[in-house]
Image 1 (tube, rainbow, N blue to C red):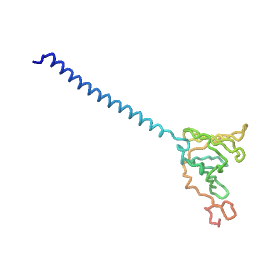
Image 2: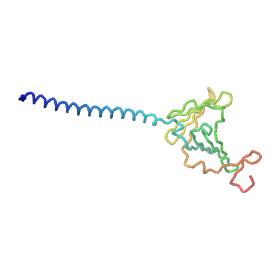
Image 3: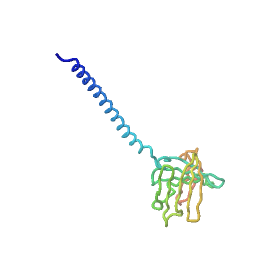
Image 4: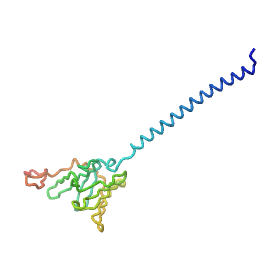
Length: 185
């Protein structure tokens, strides 16, 4: 006959082994959960960072005073980095420039989340660098021409879609003329 102590001991071992098995399952599940949350949170961090050009791609800005009306649009594309529309009062249309920087006369020095710095070429450019930052609906452009001369220009976010502006046309002689006039351009 088996003693009651032995039966009690076997039952305790059996129940403890079940508890141990359940503990292993729970700990394994928690370990898998922690590892997967770390992996997914790491992969999401790279998606959160946006460079200045990515964040401002397609944004349109206006510089306006009594003598000047200029619209610009940022593009996350070096070929057309900043497009420009300048109003020509004489012929009542906007002169379009596909990129305010000529190819080869600039280099993107910094394109961080809150700042874009364009460095001008020493020989080809008429500026040392331009720093673009935004504060709400204001674009701040700090233009450094040389060590002793710099200028800060403020643009406001445009309410007008620049693609809807009336663009000037170039005539056969290479001069701008208005597409608004009935006269032959």
